[in-house]
Image (tube, rainbow, N blue to C red; front, top):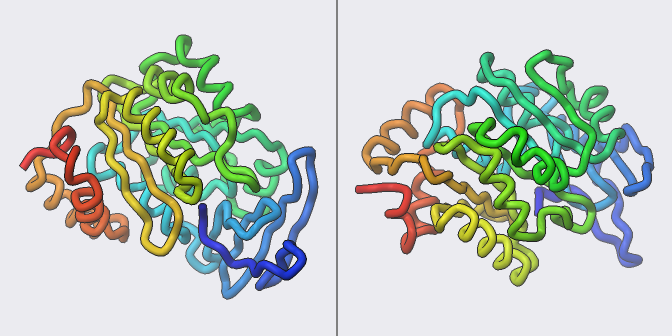
Length: 279
């Protein structure tokens, strides 16, 4: 699901390996902030790190799956309008605001207290370029699929609770609505959890149907996350040579291992890669 820094105890509970600096409860459960070795992390009552920030380097993406979610940069330039479903500690929102000054973001988060903690403990800025909406992400997408049709060039989905993926995402209608919100050449980036094989297969099936099989999957080494990159109908085919050159250039600017992302995408999608990338 995500990186783990908690230990499971004999009674099914967990104990924090680190310093608990914040804890609260709402109708959906516990919210905890833990610090260990200079890293502050957000937990929803389990061993899953929903978000993390390195205190001496807050603009760097600490979690491997979030770094991999930025593999979209291999295929698109600076986004104009982006939608984030699931805010967590706001690491992805911070990253986008920091690196893309002309980007305008909408972030949808179900839990009001999570937004408060993102601001108070994870440095999520009060920025006119970021609009935070309190709502269920799946419900928001369905309601806005007509009024905001074709508006967003990037849509990120990272919605977990303590049990896993939000139920509002678990159907084809959700992914059809995501596609409708995207520009013709837009991309959907989804953080998937591979521990439930049957459910994961269903997500892949829904994504492939909604995006006409133009979906690439990027596994995260040593973790259960798999990042899905779905390309809308107007997205071009990309030259492998161009992507390799682009990966090298992006590494110099952003410090992320884009060459490894590209190699993993090619290796993990050998049977469908030609639907997105040409040699």
